[in-house]
Length: 139
Image 1: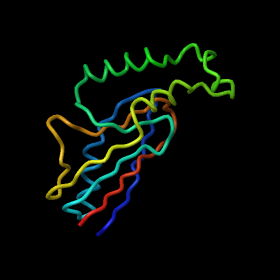
Image 2: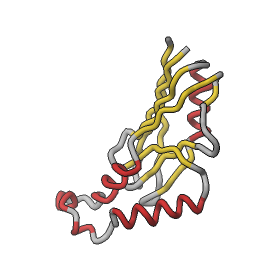
Image 3: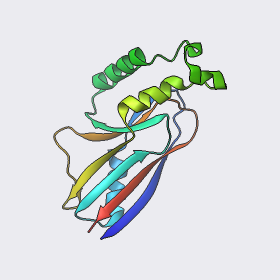
């Protein structure tokens, strides 16, 4: 069994974004040389997420609205976490809902997706560099 590890780095200038990282993960898979196995993709920050879904702008807008309804950013004073001087309590909650990681099967050197599936990086507290780990194991 072989393994391959790479970090993808992002610096989202705004507070929130959804970025399709499927092409970067496919590049990592090609570099790995692994034909059969698994890819783990996980956000290495507690205010960011990795998830799988459709790359459709209406859905991304719906996510924004839904997440903001679940955990609104303002008023920041409504969160106990923000008493530490931060203003990102909502980002921690949004990450919890959207998830930390995904695992995708690798079959014949390709990500083995269902219809319309893509991998996304979800940023909920942007403005600084953050990383995503891609770990591939297999043969």
